[in-house]
Length: 152
Length: 152
DNA sequence: TTCATGCCTCCCATGGTGGGAGGGTCAAGC
DNA sequence: GCTTGACCCTCCCACCATGGGAGGCATGAA
Image 1: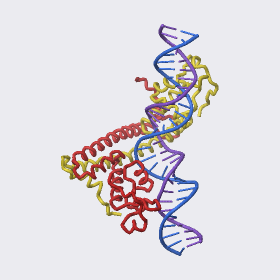
Image 2 (image 1 turned 180 degrees about the vertical axis):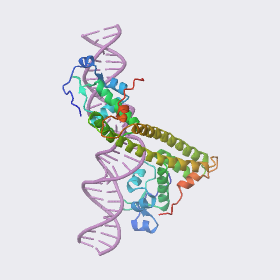
Image 3 (image 1 turned 30 degrees about the horizontal axis):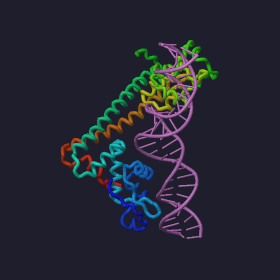
Image 4 (image 1 turned 90 degrees about the horizontal axis):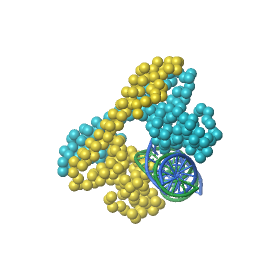
């Protein structure tokens, strides 16, 4: 975690120095106000600098980090992985191999989930195809769901 | 919801009549003990018959319902959808069209999620492909994540 | 000074699942 | 008849990511 200004500042001063209140940081980063506070609470981002009135203020660099997080979320990374990605991002001596491993591991995980979903979709479509879909009650979908599975 | 025996019974009697304790019902249905209790609490299944000692007991028909739920979960249906499916299953006058609509709607939803995941996977693989993956710090994955998105 | 807007903290909910604490019940073996 | 272990009970907590809302303070413009 980078060092943090713990001393509160005046809001007017902060603004003059280019800091943003949480709403502006949210709008600029695509991360909701709720989630920014949440990320702070769980330690994904360091505690924000506060004004005398206890308002959080964010530098452009902070907003940049938030956008990084947002983008990583969009790619499906979980919080722990993003934590690792942020650490690598901040580490100038990182090995790109570590980043690549993380990304490909995540891609594999996504691939696995895709496989599961495709199996579900295919089963559903097959069952639905065999279902008349009219006013009669007979339905292979329900028959399948209620089938006694004697195997095992 | 089907009618329920509210009067507690003796465990020995219940067993003789073919009822199962929750552990056996779990093993036979593939639904965990925890989840059976959960499904009861949220009203997906009716309250189980209880013995004098407050143990839940389940008939073969109850276990059959649990297996139905389990199978529907395996196909990715959510609790509310399963609630609807169970209602249709119990309704002898159902129209198969209703079941089919539910199944195909769910299949579409799954299709949508597959699309999202594929987009993530493709992006990740593309980025990873351009990453050397060695000891050097340069990495297009991190570059992409940290990119300032001026559009908007 | 008023008033709207935005910020603060704290609690709750979602969905589906599991873990565990603290206590009662049952059956088998001695 | 007593011990023991497996099973059952309820209640609370956790995950992950997100949002809703209540009750209260700060800020700035009219």
